[in-house]
Image 1 (cartoon, rainbow, N blue to C red):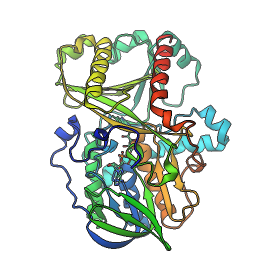
Image 2 (spheres, rainbow, N blue to C red; image 1 turned 180 degrees about the horizontal axis):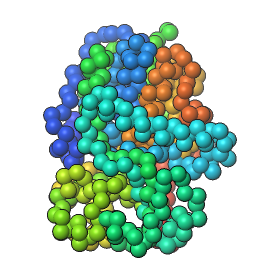
Image 3 (tube, rainbow, N blue to C red; image 1 turned 90 degrees about the vertical axis):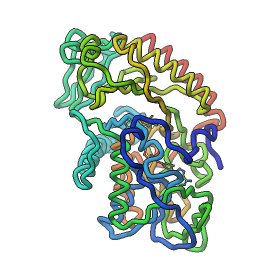
Length: 439
Ligand SMILES: Cc1cc2nc3c(=O)[nH]c(=O)nc-3n(C[C@H](O)[C@H](O)[C@H](O)COP(=O)(O)OP(=O)(O)OC[C@H]3O[C@@H](n4cnc5c(N)ncnc54)[C@H](O)[C@@H]3O)c2cc1C
């Protein structure tokens, strides 16, 4: 077992105490995998990526995969995220993608990002999932005058709107320390666990074998097949998809070691706010928002009036460290939204997002391992991207050409000094916070 954080982060025995778990209704409960079986395709991980891959295999290619999940469907990041169905998935700017992979690849990636949002919309309608979606669009809030100047200087994409500081209040977007915003027309908020559970039901309805409490502990080549071992069974598969993202065991397969960097992201949700509190603050909109900091915050008013505020920066998954990080997050929340300071945190939880050594996702065959594929590394923006990435990789799993964007098919680089990822991250967060303060 090779994982970066303390064992608490991977304890699938219980769900995080999230607002989503508390409001999603009965959990989808899938039985463990037991005994010996054979399957065409085995999928490790029942998050958005794994479940979308399984659905696409069944619907387009008539291949019934077997999905093995260490917890229950949606237990990982897919059931505990901020619910921003938005563009993103890579840490590279369009200019960086153009420099590294060419202009066509940059264009293709942008098309993929928009298609990914439409994929989620289509899933919600096709499988009749009520995921409490909210208004269209996403706000990027300028945290400094220089950040707003950069927004003014950048070309505005079609349908987007530049909102100066003075107009934020009248639009219901007022928070302390903001200097303007860009409202993009793409994306919408949703209830992430309702979406994940809806996918799990669709997988089950399609007759696909989906097993919970079935952590894969061994993965080895046996003749022309792969052998997957769990506590209670052994599964033989022609092809395997690794869809474990931030929860990956870096020895499954060893190729993963040092190529990914799971990071902690944490969220607090308040009690329902009153109309008066929202009016006093000047934040009455339900449009989802994040800010232009390097160590960014993301926030939105939920359909039931509660407020969600999330951020990254925690370095340990131990309970005491997470409690400490809550205090930091709470301070930052109250500084931005002083009129909400009287609304205590009702629930607070954390989870793992996944960076890669190439700062973009990987969606393709694992080198020199015939039949082994991976779809992961959504850089904290996987609601849409992991859904679409899972759909695309299905075609490759079915034996066809890989239709994933070119940037996700390039070889995945290893982080230099992988064993120092966590200590170096501590330094990087400190430096990024300093840069944020300087604007
Ligand atoms: C706090 C937080 C906030 C976020 N906010 C947003 C947001 O607002 N918008 C957005 O787009 N993205 C957000 N993200 C990121 C997004 O949730 C993820 O990118 C996305 O859910 C990844 O989906 P996935 O299927 O690849 O991985 P996951 O959903 O993490 O699923 C991986 C699964 O693999 C399972 N697994 C691991 N190892 C094994 C094994 N050996 N055997 C069997 N199963 C295994 C795990 O139990 C897990 O359920 C957030 C993430 C977090 C943690």
